[in-house]
Length: 362
Image 1 (spheres, rainbow, N blue to C red):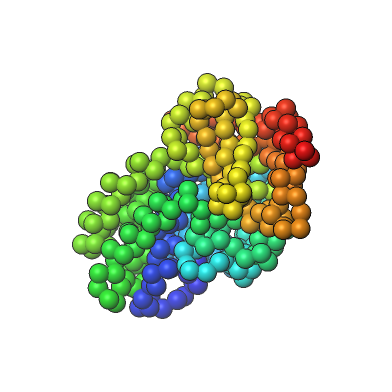
Image 2: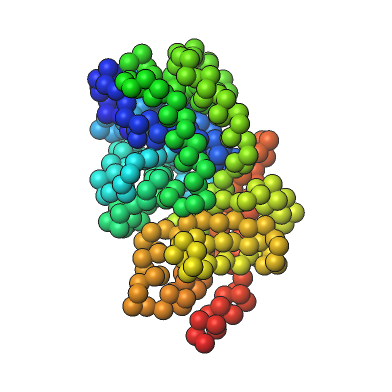
């Protein structure tokens, strides 16, 4: 996130710009999870404010620049409507605890914001529950993962092979803006202009918000060509909520086959597999219907869980089965497409769990 008041003439580093682009690609690929993008203060003038470098959200203690902010189209029972901060880090080192502390500070402050509305009108002011998802192309340090788990900040590791094409696309788009050695700067609202152009091209620009003028320049023609060629074949990503404190970003080799299977039976009995010879055991596969040849989804194991399971002094297979039975017995996927809500449940088969545990003991 860009600190408020930063010098607009300062050049943007490749890593920073890569993170901005990646955030917009992710917003597109998870668009069907039911979050509408908030891009302009007119969508909620009581809380949002347009700033030179983009949108900001009011908290109890101040304003917070926001990269990508979404609002869930359905409201879970016994909670306020949910809004989600999305931030991506695309740099050569792991995200550390300071990145997670920043996320926690932002979400804690905005969750405590209450408009100073007098009398009975206060009951008519909308309230929201804010959440935070932090994505990283290089993973997270162990302290960062532990801190995030304790404070319900969702961490998504994009260093797995499943996400390599998405990260490479962000890299290639970023490179188009560095043909000249100086690279882009924050002058003339470059960041907010770039985000707007990407959202319009990707189809994530919210309805009812006026379209801004394109001030990016000639490089944008190359970016549009790259997007037309490569974003479509990526399909969509599925966000799954496990029955534990883990957000799972699921990737399918053929998303349409997965969607067809889920639509035909919204409650699926699944098997969950891993192999120590594939990505050191951190790449897990969910197979629908437990039958060979059925559609599959893959996800990367959270770093803190991987360290616990693959502790060299323990029985990894036994711990993997224990984790699946305790935290992955139900994975819930929500999609909102064509104005219709879809809720799917992937249920880890007790029979398969028992068989796996028996094999582990043997």
